[in-house]
Length: 274
Image (cartoon, rainbow, N blue to C red; front, side):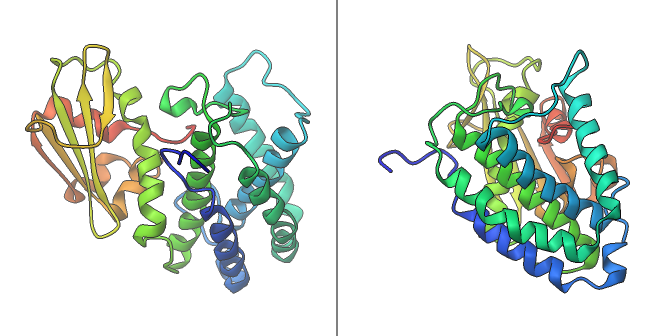
């Protein structure tokens, strides 16, 4: 590959798949029925949703078979209905069959994304980043965040670590941060204003959001003194930006310095379709 994509995670998808199957095989009957941080979903529901991701990608994107269209409602309502219908139907499926289906579809899912030109046009845009059209690398990065997030929700529920290492967490959070410019699109500031987002801990990092004449944009370096700095603990950030918790629930893990007006919108960033 001559040009490396800005976020390159396709090689991590098979790793996520292998770790997920190992995790699911380690669960006790009680673990499968534990209530998770993911709304009304239990551990088994999350595992079913992850399987839906495999099958939906292969059916819609690889095979070009959509089955049903969004209709007149919003895309979010359509996706929520698809998710709910699938999870409800999978309640009649045993954990053993769920694992078997993951094993049957995981490699094909990973192989499909590895086959794509990362700079080609993606079948779906990443709406939470404000994109009306996305490149494959961004869609793959979004897929990675789905695989990381839902597996982490299971691990968090059953108290089994594994995904908070920098190798896995940093690319997840780096993808989530692509929503920052869209989150700040209506926040007024002078050109040259800089906001710094810090995800603390060994797996975290620093992100910089700068205001230009054209709008807000992520930048690699701290080119001027930040007008606001938001520091969030790594263990909290993934829950905050996926709407699993609210900022008010994690105020002891969040530190704001500088202009509060410019800092607070970052805490409302949502890097999932929700």
